[in-house]
Amino acid sequence: MPVAIEYYLGLAVILFIIGAMGVLLRRNALIIFMSVELMLNSANLAFVAFARYWQQPGGQIFVFFIMTVAAAEVAVGLALIVTIFRSKASIDVDQMNSLKG
Amino acid sequence: MNIQLILFFVLALVAIATALGMLVSRNAVYAALFLVLNFATVAVFYLLLDAPFISVAQVTVYAGAIMVLFLFVIMLLGGEKLNYPSKLPWQRPAAIVLGVILFAEAVIIVLGQRGLLPMDMALPEYFGSPVDIGGTLFTQYLLPFEVTSVLLLVAIVGAIVLTKTEKK
Image (cartoon, each protein chain N blue to C red):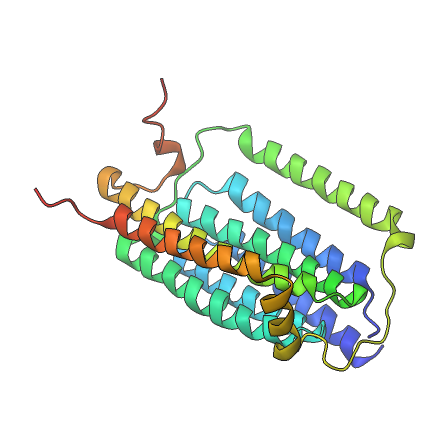
């Protein structure tokens, strides 16, 4: 196993930052959702890397739970997007300001 | 330069390129397909990290189920060409500056804590196998496992209630 853990952590950091940039820069709610998935995925990569190098299966179990939470989050989030699109005919996150006082 | 290191760098390049492709792509369908490729490369990273079960779960759950749901909703809404210009002119430079700061912090932490990071060691034979993962999941982590089943039930009910059209 010659690949040091720093490489995996560096890759996870880069993917996380790209995901965060997606959340901050894009206004399409679907792209923002995909960026959140990318960030969850980079956290998973760091978990699996640490599980491998500490020889602890607990890290992989956590990845399993994160996947479940991500699946639930996507199901509810996409249902919300469909509902918002029905009422506003737009999924621009800047348009979702009806609750503003 | 051995084969694993070469594989790591090639796949890392693909992963970063596809993530950037998702970030800049104007068409939401292209963004979703870039993300599928990204998830597939991450699944190969899991194989390199001796996690075959998680790798297969990644392909079926993320690259399969979640992204199919995304593509379905994009096509249902006809949202593939929906691009909205930002109304805040300072947001883009501010986001880039914050991203650079976050990257610098991460580099300082990872390189500064080098001594605390685990070294490479030989693994037990069964590590990461479905037997190992299943055994740990159903003994030590049984309660969280049951809680996730409740969470999935809540998600199902929530999705149905949200998208149901009211009968007048």
